[in-house]
Length: 186
Image (cartoon, rainbow, N blue to C red; front, side, top):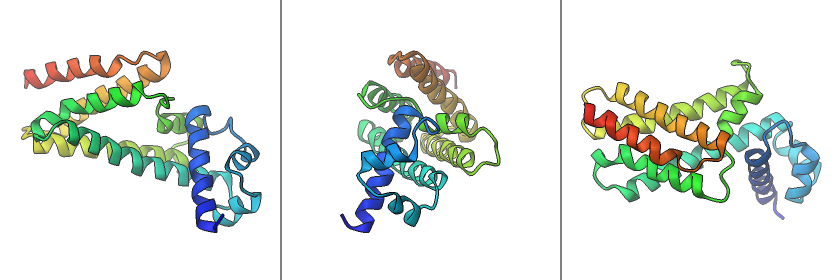
């Protein structure tokens, strides 16, 4: 396996394991065994488990925001409809067999010191998510896109947390109903 391919395999494996089990529960040896790479691959490319976690979170952030935008925009061509179709995309994520909750919420919980780079990476992802929602609120012509985005963001996060905690996959549909009421109220 080429070095770049080994590095990607290591990040992909670590991300899958972190999403499923959490960050502290998975040791380096488990990641290396699952990825089929040597310990030197980890240390040559990342230097530490923490740096690997950061690389995995960065990849997840980029992929998740891109996926959410693509799913939302594929479901609604009109900008004014995208705030609601966000919840359809969430519903698809929750219903998927690989939903184990939000890895960024797990990371912020396991690395709860706000100065920790892993905690900051989790916050950065949440900022990207809020930014996407703010973009949709602005494109929809909301009089105060920031306020509306903040309210929709709370519904998105709430649906995600409840789905993660309770394994209730209907939370996105219920959050969509709340968003509909919010949008109707103006």
